[in-house]
Length: 384
Ligand SMILES: Nc1nc2c(ncn2[C@@H]2O[C@H](COP(=O)(O)OP(=O)(O)OP(=O)(O)O)[C@@H](O)[C@H]2O)c(=O)[nH]1
Ligand SMILES: [Mg+2]
Image 1 (cartoon, rainbow, N blue to C red):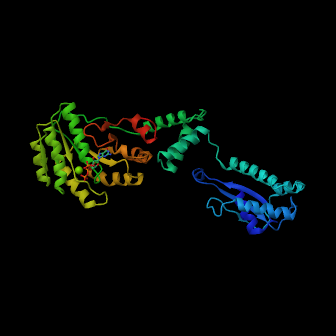
Image 2: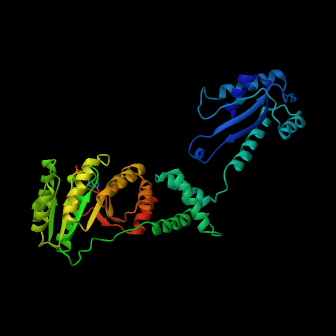
């Protein structure tokens, strides 16, 4: 405010009358510095509250006190008299006073009034929850929508305790997140699970984790197929895991080989199929993948997505891969994500239920079956 007043003095001179001040704050502004709007005029005859000489020096004091430039404040100087009779009357009545600090305290008071008018009524708990959601990287629009729903669905409830409000929101999200539970190997063997997704998201590593858990912990017979023939290194990566766990592994590069490979693995309980990472924009490669998967007729097609990706990219990728017949989601790299609010739209909006979550490079430990409560708490930035 002092900076804004100094600008007024500089623009309009020491005789300028301050008619109106307000702090401009919208919901976005809660997270950035506010703007100060000061309306002043030289055309209004407001009796001065200080002698000319004193006024000039007082104005000069304000100017020196303000930083040279600031993007956060500006003064709006107008030569037109604004119709604000209350403030002017107040100034006129108060003409006896000559102290600049009187003016300052009036301005402060106006700021406080203005703030309480512009800030929408929101219980303290909900406001804190709103800021927590933004910190957890939930998009502002979605955060606002969730808060509004929470408010509507909890009529008469005291939502001023942020912890309570958040727990209630977590339960609301929990009901919207769908999960598959762990892979259940049915009577038809082998149960084929293919992993597809963009490059480098962790498909091969996730297969190693799943294979190790089913082989070593559940004592099932596990086989591996890789259709990642684009890069020798990719085949070798899976072969290394196959060798360590002593699992049969097939490498296929054509749909015909795929049929033969599945037939050769007919004696195992579960087959994990690794595929080459595809850019969601490469429709030709996605089509190729679809043809290959059609031959294997998998029971599940997991779309593997990195939780570090943006909400928009997750949604786009889920949409592009839908054509290969994806049935569930695996979210990887939770350990690398700063906030997980970006996952919220894909968990609520995509038609894919969540199957597994991975949170590290360690095979076989850094994987867990997704459950609704955990997923909801993760995306809201709560302790799991
Ligand atoms: N921090 C972290 N790293 C992971 C996780 N899962 C996989 N990675 C790492 O991500 C990198 C890529 O993993 P891959 O399993 O090769 O990914 P991919 O999807 O098979 O990659 P392409 O076959 O090239 O498409 C490796 O360095 C993994 O160790 C995870 O949950 N957390
Ligand atoms: Mg791979």
